[in-house]
Length: 321
Image 1 (tube, rainbow, N blue to C red):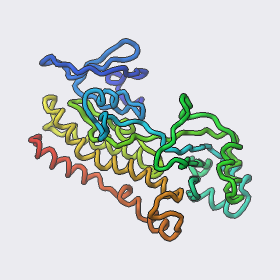
Image 2 (image 1 turned 90 degrees about the vertical axis):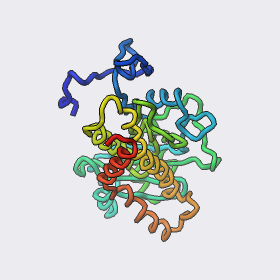
Image 3 (image 1 turned 30 degrees about the vertical axis):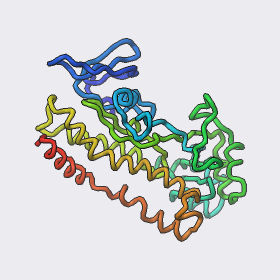
Image 4 (image 1 turned 135 degrees about the vertical axis):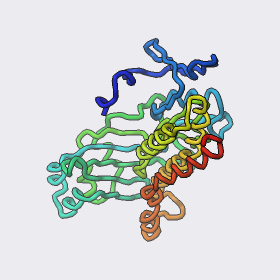
């Protein structure tokens, strides 16, 4: 993908340090300062810089962006660890030599349990099984547990540590985990609370910078793409000029933030459902089935053209068209 971007408009290997708002008339709106000592003046900043976003840090320094006493939103550990591994299909079928193993190798599976769940699905044209095993500490619920000071968010683990989380689970499930020789272990974090704004002036955030969350609906990468799609549509409108960029970004904020924030909140809730921790479903399989058969429709069946309709309405209300 990168090779299709003209070199004259792309610069890689840069790490943002700070953002400076410029006030001189007739010039650019914002100056970006980078770790290598260079800087760049620009009209517009779209911060797609991930969960540890420096652009979000800038927004929090100039205005409240969340409903907290400080006006900040913090990255918070969800209480969940995710053990991950890629299993070659031959190794998977040898390790789970049952009819169910053959079935598991072809159709994505979610195995549910109290404070635990496991997700597996084939990738790479069925040549590899992606396996993720989740374990959540709810010993202080509803308070979230805290990681030990300085503990890495991602670290090497062992097969023994991973399997120990699933004591008493069915043999086939344990056999799947035994196929992962060297799992990695990830501490799942989210922005809590969700943000009240993604925008200040001609600076905005998108993707995980704006709505980082847990992966339990498989939808947050999709939200980053929806952000990009809407921003592309918005900024390509003939009426959007340098002089009204700040108003244009308010349109982005009004249309995209409610949906992206809802996906973040419901992603955390989905993890509660999978692990029998949500009060309305618990471990009642009839209720779980009813919930899980319908809860994703609003994500999967969303018509992005509706966002453009809302965008035009917002543009009209702000005198942009």
